[in-house]
Image (tube, rainbow, N blue to C red; front, top):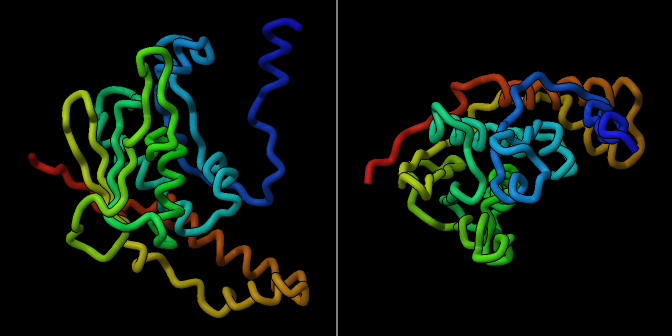
Length: 219
C-alpha cells in the first residue's frame, strides 16, 4: 500500500456524530510518538473536542469543561511553544472518586498524557515516562469550583485553571426530556428540543472564556 493510500485510509475527518462543535483543537507534542516514528520530529498530535467526546462516551458541560481546562492551561503554560507530554504534571484540587474531578481528571489525562502510577513508564531508561504525573487532592483551592493546576517539569512554571461551572447557562425545562428519552417515550420533538438545549450549553462552555479563570502560581 502506498504512503498516500495509507494516509487516506486513516483520514480522521469522517464522523457519524449527530452534532458538530466549533472549537480549536489542542496541539501537543509527544516525544515517544516522535521516537517511534508515529509523528515527525516536532510535529504535534492534534486532539479535537470530538476526540475527548469519544473518550468520554458523551458530550456535556463536564467533558467540555475538562477540554477547555486542558486547552487554557496548556496555552498559558506554553505561550510560545507546543506543550510536551511527559513534561506536564497535572494536579487536581479534588478527589479521584468525586463525580466531577474523576471524569475531568481522566479526560485531562487523555489530552496531556499525565497519569497516576498505572501510566506509561516510558521507553528504555524511562524516556517519556508519564507515571505519577496526575495527582488528586493535591492542593486546597480558593474556590469550590473545579480547579486544576498544570506544572512544567522542565521549568517548574505552574498555572491554575478554575472552571466556574455554576455560571454555565441553565438548560430550563427541556432538560427534563432526558428521562423520557432514556425510557423510550420521548417524541421526536422532545428529542430535538433536548438536543438543542443540551448542546447549546456545551457550546457555551467551549466558546465562553469568562467561564474560566487562569492564574500563574508563584513558587
